[in-house]
Amino acid sequence: MALNPQLLPDGVPVAFFNELFVLARDGVEFEVDKIPGSDRVKAKGTIYLSNIRMVFVASKPVGNFFAFDMPLLYIHGEKFNQPIFHCNNISGFVEPVVPDDEHRALYSTHSFKILFKEGGCGTFVPLFFNLLNSLRQYNQQFRAGAEAPRVDPLQAAQPPVEEMMRHAYVDPNDPTKIYLQQPTQEPQLRRRNYNSSAPDHAM
Picture (tube, rainbow, N blue to C red):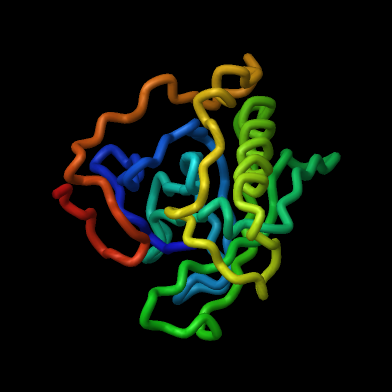
């Protein structure tokens, strides 16, 4: 996890090198705990899913919170919930992205929830779980849980996302936007690592 990652002026996350965006889903409510200055944050906005991470971008900032970045390999305990009286949601845990010069013990595991309050989730949910499972299969050293050694999400082996997207079922009741073309980003804006506070310039 990384709080408030770099965003473009239109709100799309600044991509890493070799990152491919799979989908964007508007109209979700996102909850996450253990944010500095607040025990739990709840906000409405858009979820972006790529071959590396999932990024929530709030439509309006909540205090100092405007976006939240979750590397897919750091997510564990994920569940799709279909409560009778409330909206469908995905809940789970995500480990923090710890800067190289800081100790892991200073950072806590976050719990999160994505609530689908506007329309179905028949496109988003299968793509999310398929991508997560494929990524884990391609990276056998990954072990779910807080005590597991952390794989660098940017160095992880990537499953064939394009193939997965070609065969994805698109639910007509789900307003998820599938990326058939990548959002336009200048190469010099792409980031090389999680710990830089600004995009890296291409060499």
